[in-house]
Length: 161
Figure 1 (tube, rainbow, N blue to C red):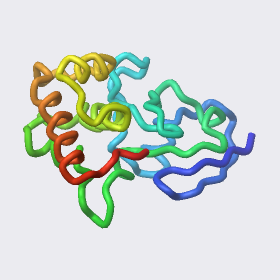
Figure 2 (cartoon, helix red, strand yellow):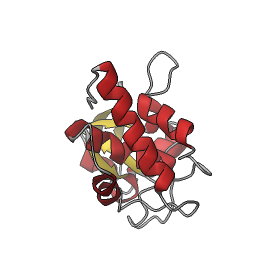
Figure 3 (tube, rainbow, N blue to C red):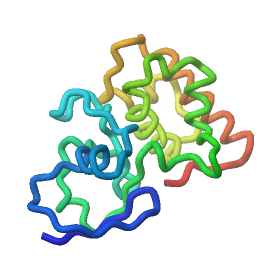
């Protein structure tokens, strides 16, 4: 089966037997190691990427499912060598901890900030509940999302995916 898709602005076209997971292709073929395999069964959120702007578990997504679609990974967020404000906020607040789960949290939080640039702490916790972090009580992650929202509102920027 022939599939075509875009990853972080780059177009790809390849033949696949349909058994290759998006996670494996991104890591093994494209070297995009920001996408992590945590559980491999869609329970932890570490492998979250955006497919057509929607948070998607890449461990449960196969290449035929992304035919004709645009994928964004954590590596595709910054511009001109600069981190995205949400990435900066994770660093600023210490929300990165060990960093393994961070890309997944950032990818789901982007969609939240796109919908609501001023979420409450409760809204953030509910939004990221599909993501697991074993290092923290999530406080610094919530702080990071709120800080990024504040920065974006102050600059008048919108989160656009």
